[in-house]
Amino acid sequence: TGTDWWSESIHVFDGDFTNAEEDKPKLVDIVLGLWAKAVQNADTAAGSIVYELVSARKRAVFPPELFGPLIEVLEEHLLLLREAREKEEAAERVAAAGARANGAGGATHFGRSRSRYALSGGDGGLGAGPRQGGAPWQRRRSV
Image (cartoon, rainbow, N blue to C red; front, top):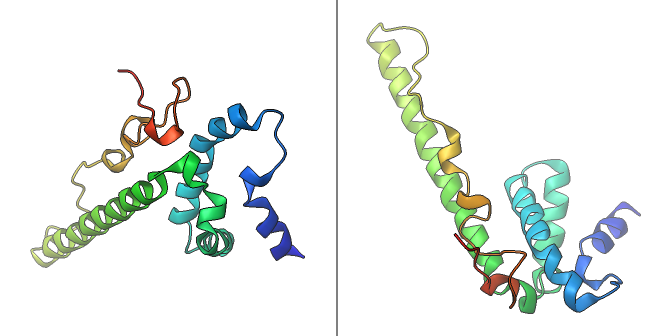
């Protein structure tokens, strides 16, 4: 059934690898990015399926020896991102309502870019780099 397929597909690290010791760490960044998208889309139909399935099996889906604290750090980052975005949107609604009440009319644009909320450095400062040794969550990109 559909749910069985979803359940099997989330267990990426239980799959067959040519060289598991070398290949699994290479997937950490990709799986972390996919999880970020799933968390961000948890309120959609497909996103909620993935979010609920993975949340119920986090330890199996994200092996601690590969991910360390990255999942918790990512989720905290995403929570802060959402809170900041909600505050900005609320402030913009208040400012727009104030402008309308004062007869200014039209939309108020503050020139702010959503990109300032993007995770910095491509990896959100989480330090998961593909070219250095050690557990993926212990690696740091060279600057």
